[in-house]
Image (cartoon, rainbow, N blue to C red; front, side, top):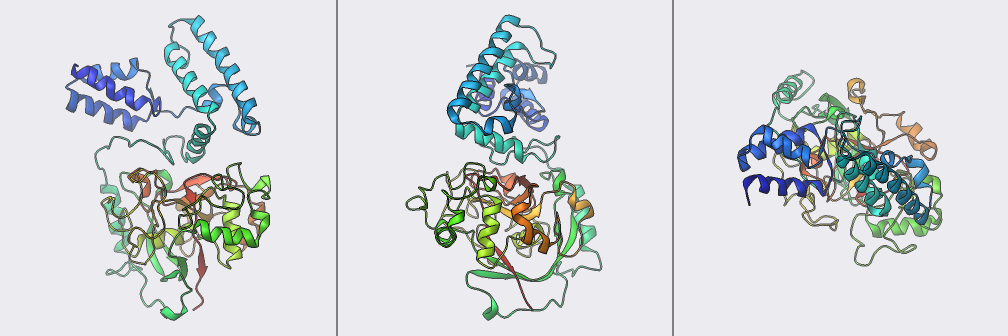
Length: 445
């Protein structure tokens, strides 16, 4: 096999995941072609084009086949399959009649037929359809190609973190920060006897929120100081066993009773009626909507963490680090990247310096805030909450419809998304197989 054929094999493998790539991924693939397969840039570019990789966009398969997301989600499976097959046959036949011409959108008809096949195969399969919808909903910026539960690892690009370093240093040197700890000094302390069972105290203080490093997307910027009052946080994500106790006490939130306004059809998908899967008692509960997570938290006389509380807790007192333990990814510290292939029981990985377990990896975690892309540009300095004050959100959560924040990455996430800074969003009714939650409680001093 020639070096060119080897590179073609790599690209064909890449295509099985997605026919689209970002500009960043294109550059990485071209670099591989030159360094590993001894091709020229021109030869490598020609391979990418010939094999139908579409650069710089995320294809919406619903739009490809002429459906709106809302329209197709409200139909039963047999009807969806029938409509998808009919639409695919119509467009595919028209493309065959067109021959090999270049379409107005810049694709060849061959590339278009490849995308049509991808759209058909994705939307006919309920699991693939849901994952594709997740990808579309998790995009935060039309210029970013972020995949919440991507199954592939993009090619790395060179580090360009000088902006991050200078910004962090500038903030660390601020007179508001303690040089030694980056926490506001003289914060009140809380006796360990006051901490509720299975919770830890997150001390009051100021920390640097967000990221300007090379992996950061637009919503993580700019790095800014935020002061957070002391609060208690659950050591672990809420488990299936804990959630069942809630369901037994509050039958209106059981799988067979929950109102359709509060979930997207996948609520507790792997449960059999009111029972979680065998052997999964100590695993984080997943397929729980934001509404249901909020209801559980209130039943426990707790609440979901604000986004700022979550990030302060995740950093564990460290300043400017990518992960809760430092700057290097580590398979012994978290469940990510499909290294295990599923969720793991709580507490199997070491805690951070605040005593919080599984704060990144295992499951994405719901936060209380509305997701606002540029919130950091005007975020309040003290106890920031996006989308209304804390009391308003807690008292009116059932009626809220705007996107909610997700943090922490999951067992499926690539390293970029198990950093402490990434922000993602879902509608509050969304429930999926790698999203869970944990609770907090304000500390009375």
